[in-house]
Amino acid sequence: MTELTEDPDLTVRPATPADRPTVERLWLLFRHDLSEFGGQLPNPDGTFRSERLEAAFSGSGDWAPYLFSLGAHPVGFAFVRALTQPTRVLNSFFVVRGVRRGGIGMRAVREVVARHPGAWTVAFQDGNPGAVRFWRRVGDALDPGEWEEERRPVPNRPGLAPDVWISFRYPRTR
Image 1 (cartoon, helix red, strand yellow):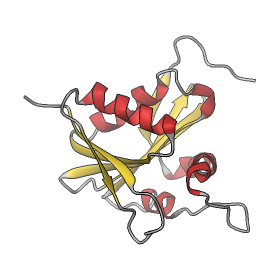
Image 2: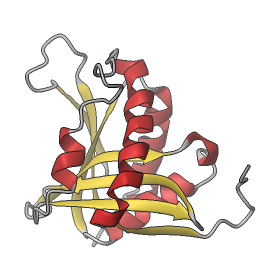
Image 3: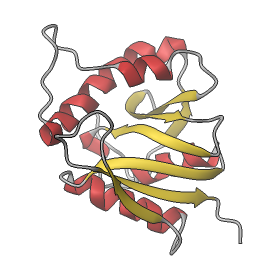
């Protein structure tokens, strides 16, 4: 069993095609976690919807996948989209449960957004209290007093509760 050390050596780097199998396995954990809040069930083969995963590894200049590791251990990922737009979207973000609430997520977000300075948006669900606390802390940490929050309907899913979106700028230029 591998345990988190006091001063973990976090690496946040662009995911390569060779990293795809690792990210695919982390994707299953991510989608499983989210299924608690949206009631999604796995496909008959045990996988979950993976359009965002496919898009992130498509080679499109509008998407970028990132992999987070502690030493040799993968601990999370992020998919950024809309890289060619004025506002980037942190489309998917995941940290394994074993390192949550220890600062790894905040460090990873900070490193990802620093690679693409400017305006950002992130969506999460109100029914996911951990995500609500985390993303509001991100707004406070990265764009104190300036970030905004709004609720937007989920496109083509009228039966779902609206997503919560935060918007921030990083770094904030005064």
